[in-house]
Image 1 (cartoon, rainbow, N blue to C red):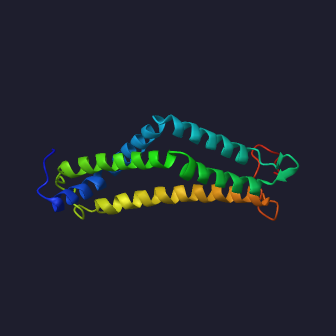
Image 2: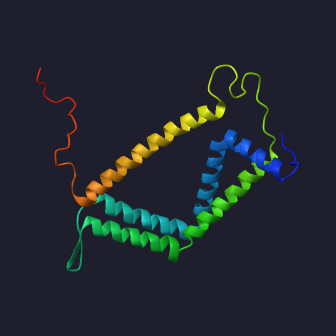
Image 3: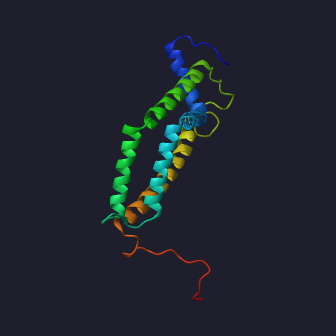
Length: 187
């Protein structure tokens, strides 16, 4: 199962085959290791909690904020929160270095496992192109493409809602309104 690769080319070949086979597991390992690195760094946890609360306030209370004699619009609040987030993550805290450390550690774990584990030989009928179905890589790419399209649709909808809340055009101008369920019927 595990053995020393014959050379660099063999290690890279094994890594490629194992990534195509264990890709989701490797992603889960990477996210878990990075999350643990962040959780075990209290300064990063406090910084991310502060930033999360700030963004929750900005996006949840969709109204102008009054500080002293000045009213800040929602757009100004989002721009200010973006600046504070940039400064907090990249300049004043160790959040970025913690993330980079976690991702580097994850890449090392995945690289070691992927290069030292011998890829399994396909069983009879599982070879790409044998027996009528799509090759394994094509089937996986199709499923991943559908998942990526669904995620992109959700993100585009969320960004559209955010932009509507910032610009104040919340659907009043000729956009169809959602149908009501259980309301009066014209039958």
